[in-house]
Length: 196
Image (cartoon, rainbow, N blue to C red):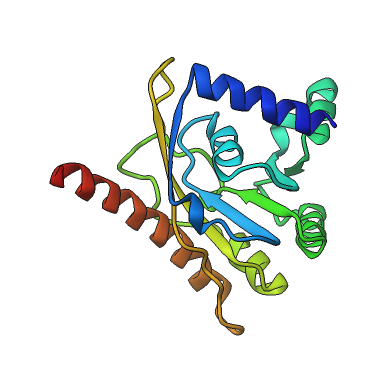
């Protein structure tokens, strides 16, 4: 209930104050899904959820956000769950696999943290996204977010075609393919801008 209210409220806010241009919305498949994007600003989870559209989401978020009990309560009501990035968080892994087996849509940032330096972004990925995709045979939807957090300025989301990995693919290889595809979406965007 709270998630539905928050989704439509944020959709109105983003439409009016932080407009988005979504390219490739037709690439979003039905069924369970792992949505992966680059991560450079704190509003990125909102961009991904609103851009991809209303679905049954589970959103992985850093455990530090849950340290305040009230904020943690709200985040859980918004379908977020904590992950301790400093170790192999068995509970978060089990929560993720359970969510995907229930045909939910997982939102995860494969780099594992925000990368503010443009020169460093989209270079490496944590193996988790590969493991989750392969263990549950779930397609990964790569999304490039070109944010513009100034009010009334447009953020662009480019949604690529979903990636379904062959059984036996190594987790690290799968994760690197995902971050590589997001990087390609960024490069394609700038090539298109230059050709206009």
